[in-house]
Image 1 (cartoon, rainbow, N blue to C red):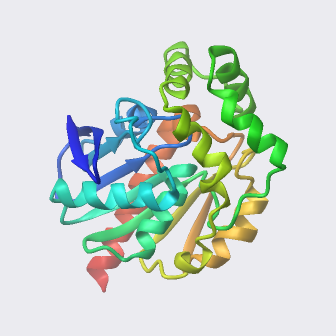
Image 2 (image 1 turned 180 degrees about the vertical axis):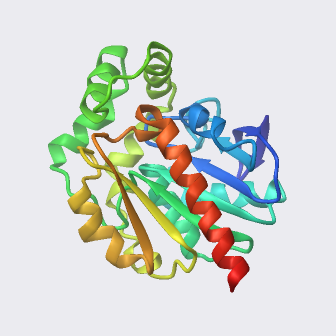
Length: 264
């Protein structure tokens, strides 16, 4: 379905049911489909909402601004439009940075935060020439294949691989450029310190993009009470590489949050 927020139509997929919703935010190059197999592990107990960011997938590609604040504003407005009263954010990579900014606003109804191979809240350390190259990775299938090979450690199934390659190319040129040129350089570290919900960080042991040592240095000290879980032998695309493990870790964390909340 399409939901209009902040002047753009976002493509939204919903599955499952439950009093508490999980809202999934995808990576740079992904879409709501990135979460398909993770949601399969969770939809029996939770209402699962996954959507395409502005400029990606089947969402509008007419916007002229794609900052982290734009993406966080969209997520906040979407949650409001859907009438979600209780929810947790689940953000991957770029979606993880977006989720951090939204969580820092302490929106009503938010009960937990899950960051999957997240980009840190500080400006990402990357040579300018690499950032410029990123802008054109998704211009063609050949470039998308190179990008996929650089960020996924484990081989993907044929269906998941084709889906990932398609998603990388189904994006607006401005959206492709905005992340390496602007959004990855935005500093939201001061805002991240305001996050006050239980937070789980799922990090790939061999993630070549948002490296484990970077997360330990730049992210974990900035989010109060964040809990780190390292996924062995996994790269940056853990929702596609090890969806069962990601789903089970999210389920266990949400159960723990529920138990702690009941005790309190």
